[in-house]
Image (cartoon, rainbow, N blue to C red; front, side, top):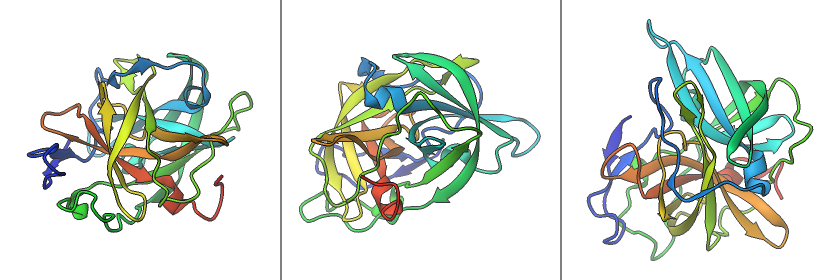
Length: 257
């Protein structure tokens, strides 16, 4: 994990550091959301996945453990740093409530994106250095479409910041998939392109939550606002603030609600 110091967001984030790769680490135990609540069986939980990829950057194998969400019958949205390099393989696991469920799906990287951080909206965290914030998205294509899960649509307008958000995260634990948990988020700052900094309420965002779906709700139902791209923290691996990469900015021409 790398950390980058950022300037304060008001007084609440004074002295914080940006952990820009919250989902990237070596094999071994991995924490998912600390606190929050066990996942239920709602639209967010039934579409959230745990992602495991194996890369070989040098001599040793490296395991990446992340979270993502089904956005089409054969497409999963996650953070691009979860699939850095050229993965030797990727596995995708869905959940029933908090527990991982079979079957396990194979996947490959279909696309990577680097969203434009834009400019902070008026009166919203004027001291934030957007150049220090990590923003990345990736889409994985499953080896076969999922028949028994409903994809979650994407936000259409990154400028319409929701007042409340929810995040789901799981990661891996030892040799197995972790338990799925959720937490509510309160946006504290945003840019004109949808980059969002949000506070986790009663929870901390940890390793394994990178790429985790951040969703909102309106009269049409649940939709994907973006994915967890980085965490702001004093001490890794968990933090109380999360940087959300906006999905709508990248996918504004297709597959949106």
